Length: 274
Length: 115
Image (cartoon, rainbow over all chains, first blue to last red; front, top):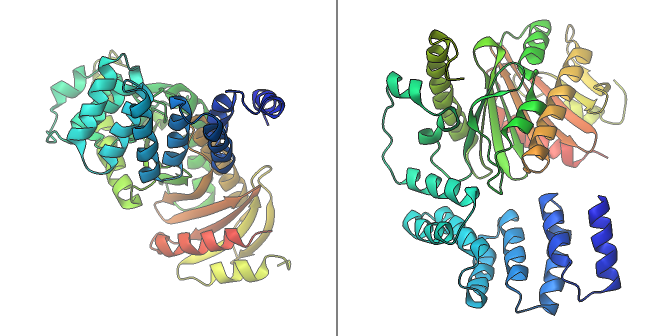
């Protein structure tokens, strides 16, 4: 248990009417302790039924539990209390997109952006807009001048999809890895995955099973796939947990092809874009 | 083969295309129990899978994606599948043509039965 969680728990025990349950519930949610987070949030909501942030917290926990209908009901309650609540607008946008209603999703996210929504709102809005735009082939010239952070942007069709190109040292070359809160955690991911390509290659040789092609892993909230690239680099893609593994592997292949073209261009240009 | 996980490992290894199954300690990469064919290097597989599983778990935590439930490593002439619970990871080493979906189901069942 972290010091903060312990402190907030003690504070809540001393004063059950305290609003500290909002921070405590959110921290527990981020740690994946969803059952406890929900109990804390539900008790807080009983004491503060007109607190929009309490409803928002319950909604976010519900989304993490895969209970979209419950989340939607809570966010609608938030908007009745506070029509300009950014979290609720963003959340409803997410649910609408998951329901296959991108136009509705775009409407809510546009409202959130107009109200000063942070980078995560812009990222979500771009995802939604891309999903309803036709896929177009990108020529080599375009690949060469693409902003490295947006290298895979047109290939990522669904909210929650993300792609990251790392070099052998785990440093980010292109793409970004956006977490559930819209924060780019690419450098952190890179640090943890650094050296994996070289390590796996050596181990595969000892096991006599040839070169490695891919690693896929399922987590509580997502599916992640990675594959080796030129010069011992690694490409990592992630998608929502509901994404079939076959579909994830196809996304990985498309991103690999894009990465290969981009790496070839930057190599010819003397690494100018990287 | 030692007793505690013998039945579990035997069930995994009798699937078509499976060459070996092991239970590995993720923390130190050591073999806890194994069902290996002659010539398979359990220690190397254990060390590799523990390391990759650990890296996957850490990167998953960094991205707020929760714990790792299943991992598949595909190579030119073989594949390794793994599922973990606590510090233990159940590992299957298989031919490249083995049925991954079936292995995944069996591994998830095996993990549930780990003490």
